[in-house]
Length: 462
Ligand code: BES
Ligand code: MN
Ligand code: MN
Image 1 (tube, protein in one colour):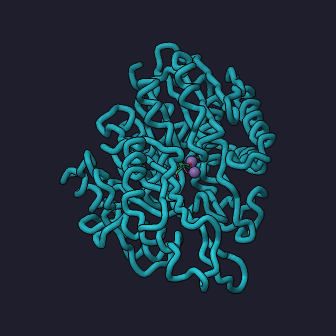
Image 2 (spheres, protein in one colour):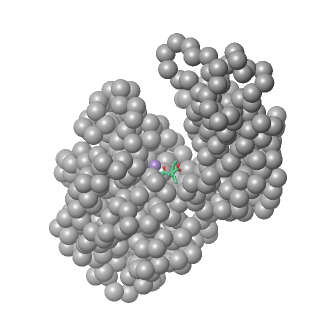
């Protein structure tokens, strides 16, 4: 259980919390099926954006819905704290597709509370965490003016790689100027551990396409002589990693930042157990790159994982056929020192060279994202630590995460502002999975943390 608040200011904030109102409004947002990948839901995307815009306008923000070439984004600002820092809060209102629907205990867009958890698509990723900031701001406003200048940027395309946000940042760089960018779109290290996240992995996502004969072939008439694209694909995939779990693409590890001994020690002290981690996902072992601990493999080492595979007959019963084509989707998580465009080029160059005779193999690139590392010696990180300590009654742990938020690197390069990743969720919330959830207490602690963080940031010189 989360310890009760200790600090007196915090007690005041907790006493002001309108739990019922905060839950009711989040549920309204969760009922909107804002699946960015689904072209039939563009109306729902707009509805979600307008919901947020109306809410922020009702809090006295100057708030608008800005169209993009894809889904709209919500921009709002309240700049009534002259001489105080400006905080840009980024989040996303789009969610992943809900499929497979039959695995949900209750429908994905009918939020339901069970065992202290809110079950709904987007509950933790990222509607619940983003809305915690909206309610955190509302909590502070119930006491008076905000202690900092606040800007909200809530996008609708994070789950599809934020293709239109970079142009938007370029165009609005002046208006979006901030001293720090706060993001809550990930997981705390453990239920009883408040966390400041200081690293995100990057991403290169590709498809491998293998082509064999000019049509599907009778596997009796042709088997033994004709090339088999599925077998070929399996061989290609097998060759992409060696028996030590290392990726074999030439140049893949060039420039990868090694962990410092201090960092390795800090992570070794975190309360992590391989046995519990394995048990939590129901597997007997955790295979991976030799020479690195589980946390190191998750947070500081690059990966290559097949995310989907197709080819040949998938229906009931048997069909004796050699397919003409096969394919796979591959995600590579990247770490500081790696560049997604370069990695995509490396795999594009490499795969055709390992395709067996008789087939052609081609790699097509999808979206990507740069890895990110946050400077731990910043006053913003210390302010976050103080805020978390007030809410959770214990100091923050500092860890990285294995996930990616593609736009974060652009925040630094285009807006020149440092990011602060203060996550309210947990891995066990099962983001992207059926039965995604967010603990009701984590939501309310998120609201309190948001309010406390803005107060702490208000104590810093501009
Ligand atoms: N909120 C996640 C990122 C995340 C995941 C942070 C796990 C910390 C832990 C984000 O919404 C997400 O899913 N990102 C995608 C990016 C992709 C769609 C370009 C990801 O990491 O797969
Ligand atoms: Mn997210
Ligand atoms: Mn996500």
